[in-house]
Length: 491
Ligand code: GLU
Image (cartoon, rainbow, N blue to C red):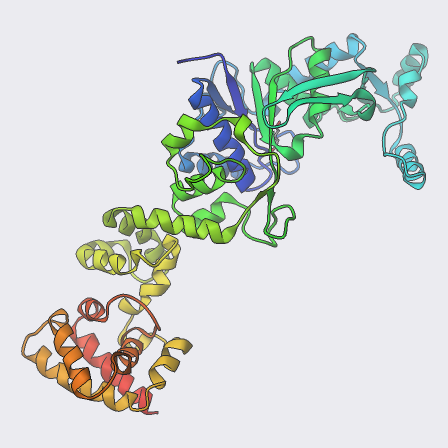
């Protein structure tokens, strides 16, 4: 059912799309969808020194990749265009003038030096750093005179006395004392407006009814709510989403893990696992279901169910969840998703993979139970692609092989036995039972052959079924690797 609900995601294109930003976008999108509202994208590029078109493009691309479609935005337009903040500068100027004329803003001539000194004194006296309102008390004539002499000034918002409230879907009814809010700068001396001012101008002009964003913006909300009052407009309802914390309990940072959505995409986390995991950062479908679909999210998501406490970004859990998604994928899809990673790892070109797709499907099948991301596949299967001499033995594989006293002899003898059967046209997968019988006849335990054999064929300590591996390698490679393996174990 369509409604008049309008929410927005308003990223600043000053960096890659952060996982916290992606979650904000996702929650706004899901909530709008659930309530039949409109979800719009606005690019907040007023920090011109740090904003770039590349970041903007990458953010849009990342959101598209997640499957988040917006109803209005800089790329598709809409009834409230433009959706790029710098393109709305004239309107911001007009609104700043309006507030100034109505007495909600005043000119402040204080120099940086004075403000610095003020801050120093406040900190010495253990006082909160804030503007002391000196210029708010200036007589009109003095202001006019100083403007006429070309003195530079900023426009400060004149915070009124009293208290202010807003509704927060996560925190409930929030009350703050206006005296806690500084007379903050609305327009800088170079005429550019600040974030807190433009965000409200645009939210009003775009008819935004609900603002859901990260908790780091909670400190800005009182300033913004007072602006709505100054504009004589109802404030939207808010929802401040909990901070994402690293396992160390500190704000998520590069130190504890990747912070950009793109990093997880490049590592090959399945898209739906990323969505699922981001949702778990502060929200849960219910107490028991950790793995859920986008449809379940849209059907059930409410901002009021989001937790207040910081959300721990648990990478182990993320990897576990990614693995759950991988195991649910049909093999053909899993293989398709892995293909670009195999190509990027230089194991084969895309055309080479396509030329022996059935073989590649079997390769992928062997690892689907084991990997947690698409990116984990290539190193695990590289031994199937390279030249026989080209693959290295991992230390634990070699250690496992050498554990067995007669490893070289066992491997060499098995190689000779296998050669005869392969010459007779048998397939490795036909030889499973016979091989086990061969081991028993020699009075050995299974690992006494299988560990040296696995090491010789794959260079790895673990992996899929050995006979399947032999089929994938092909007879010449199997013969060559067993021979080389035995030589190497002798040395
Ligand atoms: N542009 C702000 C940011 O990137 C978001 C502002 C808001 O949602 O109100 O953090």
